[in-house]
Structure formats: structure tokens, C-alpha cells
Length: 109
Length: 276
Image 1: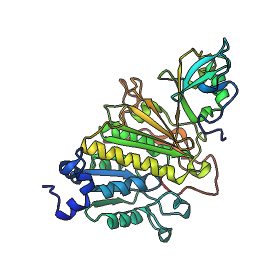
Image 2: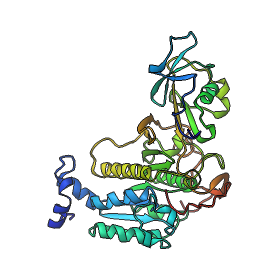
Image 3: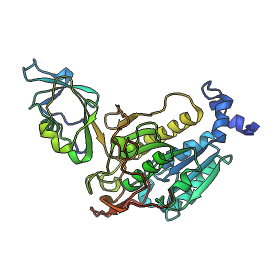
Image 4: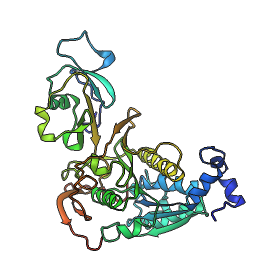
């Protein structure tokens, strides 16, 4: 399992629906990447992402359709029924890029 | 005006027999023009299927030469093409496949200086680039000029595709507002890519173009489709227009084209020579 790959790492805290044990009081039903999951960990986004083994620099995270600010993950509570999607950046070349702009002016548009 | 010859009717007979296309749809394809940016992993299958489908005029823009490491996925090019400009190799393959198609060749990189002049000549643009600066440049230009863009990206065993009607449906920045931090996302040269994944995504891009040009089906507007080859799953995410989008939102901060700067954060012995 590579850390970059979505969804294939199955942690104890994140189970396929059919693998779920007798429900603990703390269990959350989530829809992660379109698939129903039972989550047994702390109820915040950062803990969920850690359980998933997601590389946070690699994807945008959406909760119920809203893209989250990555600085706020610890403060994002999870609730039963939440939908979590990862939007992966794909399509870089051999170089990364700097957020610094080469130029912001194009004459004659 | 765009009547099909007997040879063309025979060539495209499996299209024409489809009620959703028919002769009228095939004529629309002959009348249409498509620009494919990049003749690499995504551009190869996209160009092959668009050429085979009989799109009347196809532009190819690419400034690279064929490298041996490209051939595992860039199926437009052959072993004897190593070292040759990709646009030359691409156009030769395309002409051999379908001599009825007019091919415009641009042996250059897309820049903020030339992008408007080039994209304005085409009905639909296909993104097959291998870097984020050009990806964002292309998105922004297509939004500003209200062009239709079919986005595609690949990495390792994953792919994504999204169709964008510039200024009308969610654009790439509505989903990915800014480029990833430097070094955050590895390239195909650094992380690898399964060649066939490029085939899947590039072929889906061609499929989207054919739908958009002829009007059948539901294009992938306001939807982002992610493909996971390891588990062979597709995951669709609704992509609404973002009112705060810096280029197509209500108060856009990007009103003129910008080009991000390349910085090679990671050195790799296998420099990726081609569009992905």
C-alpha cells in the first residue's frame, strides 16, 4: 500500500460496512469516496484522515460538498452520515511549481 | 457543405448506424475542430480516437521530443520516433490512421502570449498537459474565452476527468482553487503511472469531446470523475461553480492570464519528457 493511494488502506478504526463489529456507541457511519464506512476513531477530520493514511498535501478534502481549509482539520467535527471526498491533484510534470507568479500582467487581452 | 464522401460513409458506418449520431452527427464531427494540448500519455489516445472518429480539423500543440521513457504509455509514438518532435510523430500517425482529417501542428509550448490566438481557432480543447502551470493557464484562458475544455489528469493508478464549459459550468479552479504547494504532488516521472491508465482517461476525454460536438448524452459538466485502477472503481464528485472562484466567481481576482513559475524541487534521473 502506498500512502498516496486512496481508499485501499484498511485501518482498525475504519471498516467496510460489511466488516463492522457489533456497533459501539462511538461508531460513526460515513460515506468516504462514495463508499459506506464505519469509523470508530475520534470524531474529527484529522483523526479520520490519519486512519485513512491520506497524504494531506496531495488532495483537497470535501465534507458534505464543501472543500475544507486544510489548517482546520482538527477543528472539523464529524457526524453520522457525513460524506467525505478526496479531490486528488493529478497532472504534474517532472517539476513542481512555485506559488510565486512569473508575471501577472498580460497586455491586450 | 460538409457532405460525406462514399469512402467516408463506409469508414464511419459504425458511427452512422448509431441513432444518436447518424449521418448528421458524423457531419458535425467533420465540421468541428478540436485542439489537444500535449501529445503524450493523455493526448495519444485522445488524438487517436478523435482522428479515427473523423473530427474535421485537429490541432496538436507540444514542444517536446519523443523519449524512450514515453513509449510505455504514449502510443502515438514508436521506437523509431525517439528523438523526433512529438508533433511530427503524432501527425504522421494520425495521417496514416485517417487521411480525411486536417491536422494543425504547433511545435511550441502554450504560453500566456499565444494561448488566446490558438484556442480561439477550435471548438473544444482537450487538456493533456504534464504540468500544473499549463493546466491552470489553460483553464483560465478557456474561462475567459468561454471555451469548452475537457480536463484530464493521471498519476500512478489514478485518473480524473472533468468537462468544463468556460464561464458556465464549474471550472478547474472551482475545485482546485490554487496549484498544490511546491513538491507536494509528485510527477509521473517521480511516482510512476500505469500506461493503460493514460489510455483509459485519454479515451474518456475523446468520448466527452465526441458527445459535446454532436450533442448526444450528458457531458461531464459540473462533475469530477475520479478513476482508481487498482480497485477499478469510479468515484463521481459533484462540482458546483464556486462563487468565490478566483477566475469564474462573482468577483474574480484573476482577470488577466497568469503563468506560474516552474521550480524543480525534486531531482529525478528519469526526467519526464512528455505530456501526460
